[in-house]
Image (cartoon, rainbow over all chains, first blue to last red; front, side):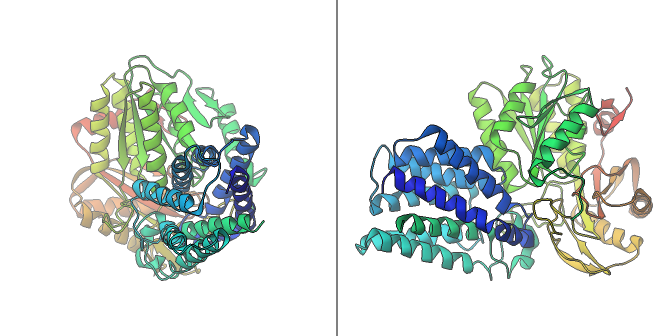
Length: 208
Length: 330
């Protein structure tokens, strides 16, 4: 997976977020403040513009630029959290021009640690971690099992999707939904839903 | 959705253009989205910076001026500002005595202000932070993001702003800001939801005879739903929640705050009941504010905020202030 692959990933994310913008905002309206779709759309549009302007030469540089742009443009909790995730992944990739599934797995673990360090959320708190952690685990397992890259990404996307759906019965313990207490039960977490979109986009980039 | 906007994407910048045009005492950096006092930075004075999502007007831009904030950073509607904005504001108000960040306790606000404080520190600006978390409707526990910052933000900005105006050092201004927060409590009630322009429809549905108890200021539903009742009964529920958390006594500063869509006559009816409740508890409303100060777009409803005063806090509350939304004594 080279720089072009990761640029394609960001394109796929931007398209998916735009298509799902209203859906994400409605999920957020139910247990939050109805801005998640609009914020991510603004952020990934800005990320694409930044990439077009700077043409980074390595996957690592590309992801760090995407992360920094999200921190600068998105606001809310999702800006720093997603921004940190992309920056940590990019930093883990270093100067490498080509990223193996094993390196991607390492990068994803770095992203997860960054998000957890900043947001202090554990699995089961009804946050983006509930999609990100299972995806990181599934990718690590797929690498151990020696699956082909496309199969490994397929497994990660499926785990993220399943993790997001599994937030529905949970009571939120972090973020704005936690203010609702038991009333947050019965709704999918918008951050977990958008994380699942990111992994769906990764799978789509691989099958281009 | 009917709103007086030009487009959903330009709501915040279009409003900033209006603020700039209406208030020559402010300098509005529309590109970076920062509202400054025209005379910032003031040499030797601690700078006060606050900010948060838009949709709560006049909070925070309406409280920029003599005796209150030096700069305010509006984010998108209900979305915290970004670190770049906050750094711009922090550097722009630093007169060499350091800068106090006044942050409402929400995950996003806290993260963005933390990043800005760290980066401003790298550039040589001393920053102290006070977190406002006055909303008794949220349990402060391991199982929530902690209590929300709501109406007490205005009290903190006014009182800390008055102390900063006297030339007090950063540590002192931060101490009084924390003291105001610790002595303040709030509770909010919604009669209707609000409509975020980008969402296009109300954030929740509420029947004609239902109200939401324990709401915040972002159109999120409250802790519980209850049947509509007389103002007296609703106020009792709100005040009981406050009194159970921090028993009401002595000289008290009280704000009855409209959520944006509430007629002033109803807010005065609420205030009369709040005042009667305080007397029943042996407390006295010695200072008061009634009006729309910390709003939630077009929501109908109110919040009540109390602050147990000391001699020092009363003097600082009474000190002159000159901002678009709060002005007296000058």
